[in-house]
Length: 72
Image (cartoon, rainbow, N blue to C red; front, side, top):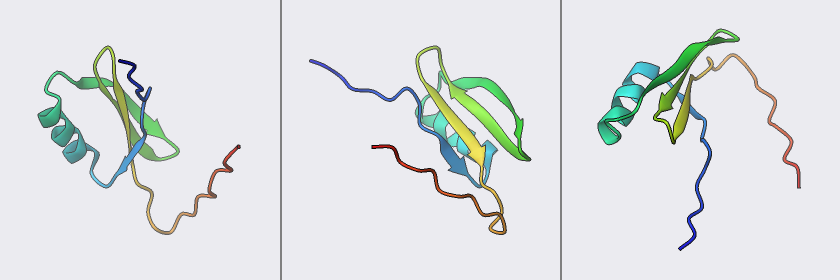
């Protein structure tokens, strides 16, 4: 059987610590692989040696982000 899997999926969240706790309940072997701040937003890579789930705090409503262009 062939399985299709994602390399990673970016997740925006309001509370990065609560989101981390939620996913660690689902996947108890996952740990924080890296974390930091980018453009004023706290980010975290949560996962294990095979999977990664990048988490990033949502921006405030006053900031506008231009949608990415989808390439066909």
